Amino acid sequence: MKQTTKRRTSYRPWLVAIGCVLALALVVVMTSPGARQPSNGHAPVVVATGRSDASFVLDPARFADSRQREAYAAARQVPAILNQLYCWCGCKENPATHHRALLECYESEHASGCDICIGEATLARSLVEQGVTDVRRIQDQIDLTFAPKPTGS
Image 1 (tube, one colour):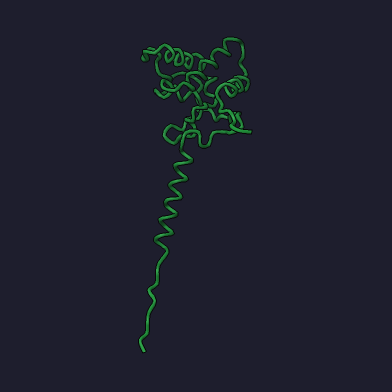
Image 2 (spheres, helix red, strand yellow; image 1 turned 45 degrees about the horizontal axis):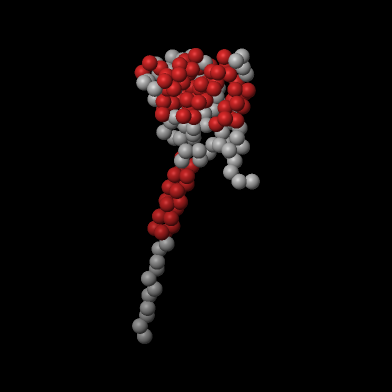
């Protein structure tokens, strides 16, 4: 009588491959812009960068566009405020930038190409010029203006 041997199939390579695909998908989802932004329309508490001066803010004169110059000038005028504000553009959640506060957007050319950063800095400066110095009130205005609006009800 001939004895047959079953060939043992190993599922381990398939399980490893599926695990890798799922892990990669999770990384892509979690690092996409806005993936971990607060969904309640209120900014989280910002951990300030440890400086409140404009020493790292780029010179506004280097930009040709007047909106960019105005925003970088605002960052130089109210850096201590911007250093305590959450930026709604998604730069905090983006692993490439991972900005801790709005001020950091102005320490590179990042803000020059971002309407949200530009709007937030100019709004913050405008509020300070109107006498609003409470950072929470300024952040509340930024939240109302720039936070994503909930979809569906």
